[in-house]
Image 1 (cartoon, helix red, strand yellow):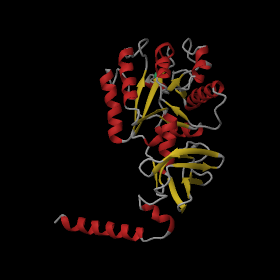
Image 2: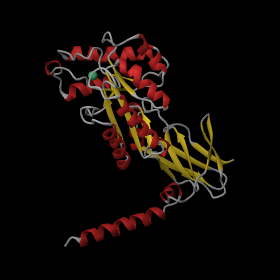
Image 3: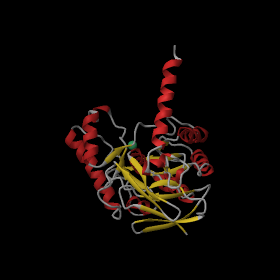
Image 4: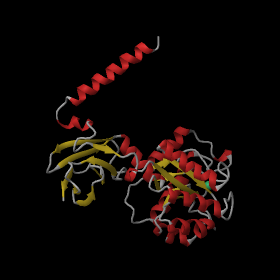
Length: 332
Ligand SMILES: [Zn+2]
């Protein structure tokens, strides 16, 4: 008999829900339609998915083709650079590119791997230092993304534990397995399908690029543009961001809790906490809060930050920093 245990399970869930609804105060936020009830959005701006464009080896085609096309569409990308690799690391990577709103990430100093652990540490440390030097306005310490360089096997004889310990020491986060244009996705259509898959799964999708219309493992520029145009067409559903920001958002959200401190016709007061380390995980989360029927516009205050938002279907959407001051909403 398969039905009997599941009926018992259903009954247990139903009685638990009834018990939760009978609780006074903050726990009533479980009632999703009550004023004050707050949902932490899956991704920034309540988008369904995140998408990360990653570019390896600081190539001339990134400067010539990629960055202008990203800029045209107001997109960012994560650039895994080797500041010690001549002649590819040019002055433009030290000034214009960091200023262009894209994010630099660690791909080791020389892309050579290392013979021993001390050598690998040096490769990782020097790359982070070079990135910090050309992005002086970014706060320290901060999280940088890390992409493992493809090198000869004898120059990468390190265990997962050894690499993870080094990444943790230098506040680096691994971007995950290599999934690349040309190698895994050969056309603009195949790359656009990765975006659709992320939307369907509510996840963070990504593609790693090498050359774009030039140099090695190169995808033709029209295919790359087809992907970017698909991201424009789906941008009400997809947050195009860099790896570190997506990682921060997901980590903060996983350990976050929004509590209703007070909710009446004049004011809603919320607290937002997260288990993530606030020094490194400093990205605001997007909250969606139910407001009383008469509230069309509403002022949201957290500390010194003040915004005015408009209600849609009885709810407002706004950004708030976890672990900071309480958040107050009042009708305008
Ligand atoms: Zn590489």
